[in-house]
Image 1 (spheres, rainbow, N blue to C red):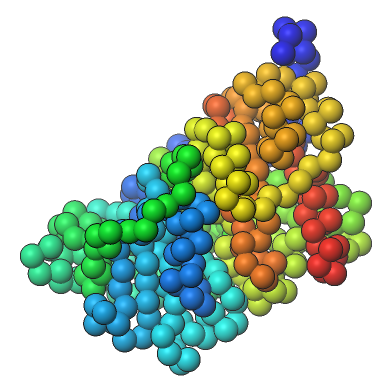
Image 2: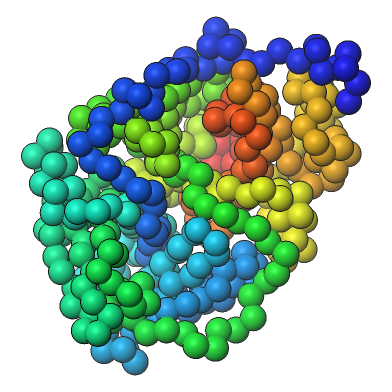
Length: 392
């Protein structure tokens, strides 16, 4: 881009877009140190097939398994890893019990967003004392020569839980009861997904502030950004969102709720088909979004599309982002800029038959935002998808 174009870029301000809290990280409480996301567990209808999907399309490597062959009688689980991302895919082996009920009601979806901590007992005590509902009291899982894994869990929105995991005295494969997959099938290459950037929760109308308060009061998080329905809207629908973060910034949870509109929003569509509040999408960070998205498309991943008009206006709005606009349009990648830098992002279509969970791929260059400049175009793209499904 020329210098003239770069100087014409105006970063979104609080007045033009979002209400940003520059002191969010300092304000977050430190009574509950969270070292990051340990893993995300999906409860699915068929874990073996889900593992094949993440291996062949997304480039994850299966590293551990639990099921009938390891003495587990009610479920099968595959642990999938790529760089700093660990996914667990778990399916019921019987028609009864919470796992089978979860899949029957919701379809495939996120059950557990687990945190890495240094003390699971203190984490459990601190959160339950502040109002969290316990799901698993502090527990030690004996791994024999591999040591002891410590874990506890509390509940959050819908049927989602947060587990606290301490691996400091455990040296085995994921957890006791799992065995190493010694000769995994080849996984897709050319992908560079590094870590979980953020996890987005959808809650019902009027519930956003309740869960903002939950993460503030129970986990010590602080509100980083507030997007209201004046920011995230189209002619037909709208939503509201507040982003919560912990003190070190490793955990970021946008909480969305639908807003009143002429037609049904994407948030309400999720709630209707998931049949409850839940995790709408997980953003995976990369430092090579062009190569990663190109390979994902070759592997069969389906992404939301943006109209040509979006890319025609992009140079003036965001300036030089290191990738030719023609390449961004070819791949459907969006760009946005704020006071701290810029980001590139793209969203998949739902990855299962129900219009519920999807992934975001994001590459950050200074920006800690969430693409406010893309919200309207993204929302319109989502509405086009809803209309095709008859859900708008």
